[in-house]
Length: 511
Image (cartoon, rainbow, N blue to C red; front, side):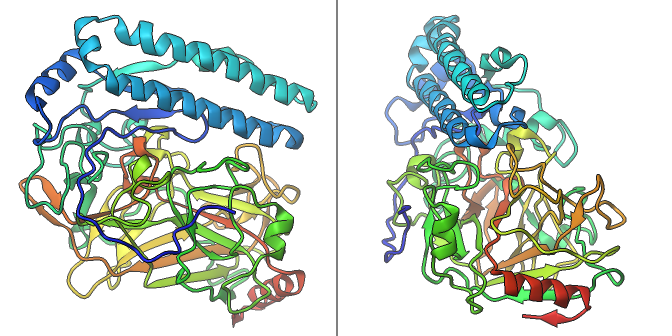
């Protein structure tokens, strides 16, 4: 069984100031090292000087998983495990980077010779095994796989870009500077809810003040990401079907991801809330999921709905503070259960919808969009009473009496054949601007997830944020709001799925 946190929480006022080691799922990603010592560390000024002299703050490796778009089904689990090994190799290299600051300061070739060179050798061997896995299953490995072995050291001081979406894609549309030394000296700011402000957040890897915006300062209709369009309208199939599955009152959580990393413990490196299916973990087969219990009121819905938890960074900790997926991966603070979790399926503006196949998997959003860019990003943050104002690259600060809202509109066009794809993307698609499905895809019910949280508003003063909140993330993603994502595996029974389709196509509102 997967690990979860179904235990009474034990808040502890602790400071997590260790450098955050990361593995970016899929064998790539940008690893940020927190070189800025906190004020109570011995010789912090000296360490800062050495770190600045060393100048290498990150390791940037190609995202191998994104390149593997045509992997035979028989090879996918083996390939997933090799991708996890690539991730571990990056983590080990990052750890060595963070632990050898003095050597780096004294030898300008140290990073290349002692860290990046050995990392490349290990990646070459792992990439070879990925190719062998694919060929043994009758597939063909992508050409030029060997070029994906090279990783680069990224300097501490990067040129700044303008904040906002659609800017430098290497920066995920955000200013890399605020992911490094917010506040200059990286020292603990005292009464800041126990946060080390070097990179922001209690674990030193975000969030920072620039990740927040007052919702009243957001213009209505300002969300401009092309992904996540609502499929429903006043023509076509206009009905809806709502399933009530609770808010994870069971505290069923783990840091696995059975879609992306089957058979890999802690494959997500961050905690997920699970509602609906109660058997979801890295080792669950489709048969396991089909036989599991569900929290949904209608027992015909055993689908799995899961998303990264939100944590309140007020100096307290949760039960996973020393565990994988929690404090060990830079995810710290008290987990906040949603006050509401609304799960609704809607129709298509231009046509009827067809039934989803059993075990269909859909991921919306990108857990690595801060480093991957905005191609798959799909985030909508808002506040109750202000939901005509949506933000994508900021967490909203809501006025008194208003709650934080996360909304995810899923892909609702299906290729008609596959329940998954090698990169977990190409078997489904978002509707086009006119609401139709392109490329011969069929319209399926669109899942819309609306999560509401009662969270105290963070306080920002002198460029510092106190009592921040943030979603769990891969450590190198710095807990940026743009990395929000949501996952779904369909396990409606056939009768209930057909009832949903009929309801939506007839223009009725059912549950």
